[in-house]
Image 1 (tube, rainbow, N blue to C red):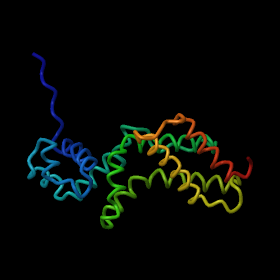
Image 2: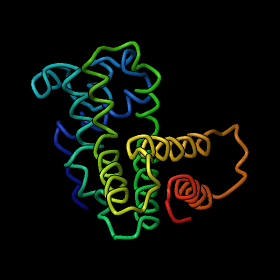
Image 3: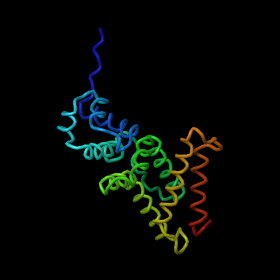
Image 4: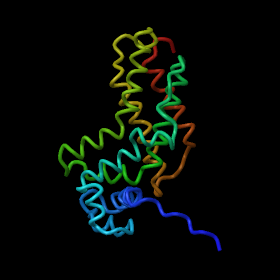
Length: 201
């Protein structure tokens, strides 16, 4: 008789369950009772480990987007010295982050305006590391004279991330016809940024 696989610790089961319930029911609709039931633990255990739903949300974001998540997926791409290659690496990494966590991200986007500073700060933390790394790379390119005078690295970073985000959302919709491959879309986004901002076309 084969030994049964060990169940994950209660904390991990609660984190996994909370991610599913937040994505399914939204930030407001998710209850600690539903999360505990999904995890197969009692509500007292949830409060003992996390104290509040807000702290549980913090922990879910940390597991899926924070430093502890870096072992399960590639880190922020290191600069290579080639701006095009760095933009392509950033776009692929950002796309992966979005695709792997799209239900939870959608739930947070849909409700974030109903919540206070805590939830908005949590939402910003999801995207901050990659955004800061992209801004730093574009600032380096500007300092090296690779960008046209007046090109704002912060605006360029947000425009570029917006293109990647829109592509992921569009492809995830079951009602939208898939007219081009994801790789072609990302390549076009890189070309557009470079054509608009590069000193040397």
